[in-house]
Image (cartoon, rainbow, N blue to C red; front, side, top):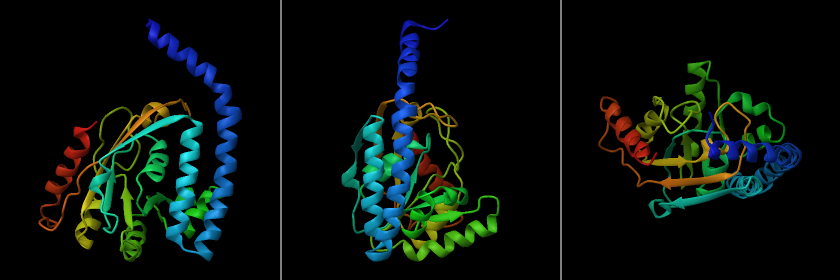
Length: 248
C-alpha cells in the first residue's frame, strides 16, 4: 500500500503531465533544432569553442529552467580554467548532460554514441563543435575515434567520460570502463571527478517520466596521474570511483 507521501507524489506527477507533453517537450524539440543549427553556424564562422560554450550553455539552462530544476554547484574552485582534464562523472540520467553543459563552466568535448548523430539539429551541431562520436559495437573503431580526438584536448579544453557506459538506476555506481583512464595516462592529464545527485529523480534511467527537482553538481579536487602506469591503472580507477561514490 502506498504511503500518503507517495500518493501525493503520484498526484503531482499526473498534474505535471500536460505541462510536460504540451510545453516542455515541444520546446525541447524546437530549441534543439534551432540551437543546434545556430551552433553549427557559429562553429564555422567564429570557433567551435565559442559555439560550444555559448549554445550549449543557453540550451541547457533554458531546459533546466523550464523543467524546472534547481542546480547547486560545489567545488568550482577545484577547476583551473587553463588546465585540460579528463572529466569522469557518474551517470544516472540523460539530464546529466544538461547539468554538466549548463553549470560546469569549462570547455569540453563529449564522448557520444554514434546514434546521436542522427538527431536533427543536435547531431550536426555536436559534430561541428568537435564532440566525439564512437561506435560502441566496434571496439577498434571506437579506439580510433578516441585517438583522433586527443589533439583537441589542449589549452583548457577537456573531455568528459561517463565510465559506467550507461545510465544507472538509483544512487549506485556501475563498473567503470577503462577508456577514460587510458586516455588520462596517455596524455598525462589529471582526472577531474564529478558527482551528480538528483538527476535520476528528475528523469529516471530508461524512462520519459520527467519531473521537477533539485540537483547537486559536486566538483572534486583533480587527481594527478603522473605516478600511475598501465599496470597500476586499477588502483587509479578504484581511487576515482571511491571519490565519486563518497558523495552519492
